[in-house]
Length: 415
Image 1 (cartoon, rainbow, N blue to C red):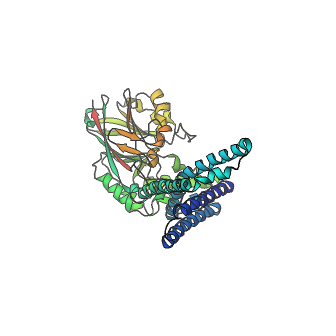
Image 2 (image 1 turned 90 degrees about the vertical axis):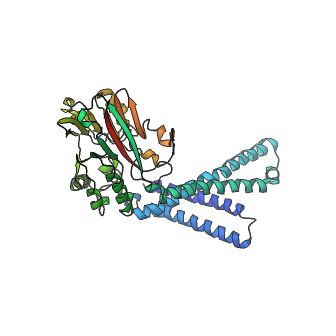
Image 3 (image 1 turned 60 degrees about the vertical axis):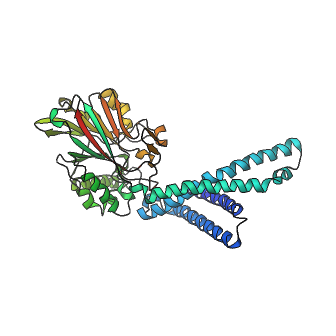
């Protein structure tokens, strides 16, 4: 682990040095006062990023507080944007290096004279490109941290099925997912989001996993908000891959088990029914449908398969309409559609829409679509439906750009 962060430290340092050269070239024609101001800001930001890289060498990232993760993420964003910006300079330097080698080896000429003839104007132009293509994405991502992370959006969908009992025609499900509560610095954003949830008039509220980033203690201070979710037919939940504490180095296996038990207690104390490879019946007007919930089951990127579908399904075949809560949407194609064709609606989360992308009417795109075939919204195959929630919270990058946090309202309709 130390060597991984040591390499990260070296990379950050190289990027900062390279970018400072671009800033110096960019500001060479500025007045002395303006040049000093620009350089002082550049040096301060470079020191800030290098300091964070040094801290990561000695203080493991999972142990960072939410506030420190926020400010460190801002620095990491700047580093990534700087890397993107200096790519213009880097490509030019590589081209010039090959030209120089070619001339030295084959032409036997003094390459420096040729390269430097028009060097100043070219380097300044590329430095301007580097600054421009650093600042524009940096501003976008910083906006995503300050505003985008809390731009809650209500997405509405209608699921029609001939299997739905008449009593459930118009039944309203509100789905939330991927709260990642440890990423929030205070409980006000959660309160705001849950107020919106309660305004939807849900018949049932379903949470599809990843309540925390890593440990149950992240929920401290959020107890009242978690208890505030209520619905006539109850609040049900499942676990996501982050809820098991798999990404933490525990002193013993027993400590890890205790953490999971503590998280289960948080669900229970909040009034949420945690579904652990089981099902329950939802009843309305004397008719029933099945709600199944399994532990995390991932088909992509080696995510763990804790879910045991046959345990959740056992006895559910008697119900005409079945809803499954399964955190990872890759489960739908890999097992649900092939082995359980009578699961009418599967609800998932997990992808976050990568917290970055473009969504306009009739078009959506995110890099996550190259990993997950179903990554946001409603999908249908034959008589089966899948809805992938974009997530309420955030992880890693403490913000969102283009893919805003989601509260889903699904209305069941009899076809």
